[in-house]
Image (tube, rainbow, N blue to C red; front, side, top):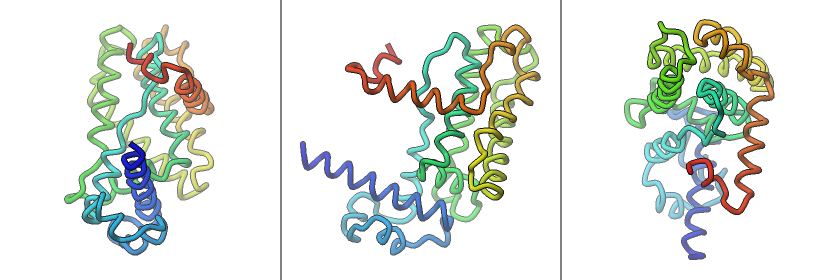
Length: 222
């Protein structure tokens, strides 16, 4: 068991080191030597878990699974929360930052793929549920809306990175939802949605508190 736990920790350390390098330099310019330097591991330890740079990129993209959400009365609030928690975590999580860069790069993406389809499907699923609940306007097509909003989110995170090193990304995400939601939500739902810049931080804090309980996050799926 201890050996298995060490292997899991080593794999995560390799992944985070690769993410740091990919986020800073991109896929094409990143080297295995750079990753080993950041990770402080031997080449053998790296290749035991990931046989190539492409495999590392795929591992990072596979880790872009949409985060656990706190169940809300409104599915549209969960949709907002998904974006706001991503905005909160992006400056703090190199794996998320690397995933965003790898997904947007043309060079290499034909080999390692992109996380965008996963995020679009997750977003569309929440919008589908919101539509069944009567929370969104009748003209809304969930997949189309999900794709448009993801494209907009990618734009604001790129601007935030370039202009403030992500210091204002939560404010930008809040502004994005304030502009988009009047065209998505029915009026009675719109007035109930929380799009404050600190929404993501509050949801993450709630998830962390739940994870510290004896049942952990298992209660969210019960």
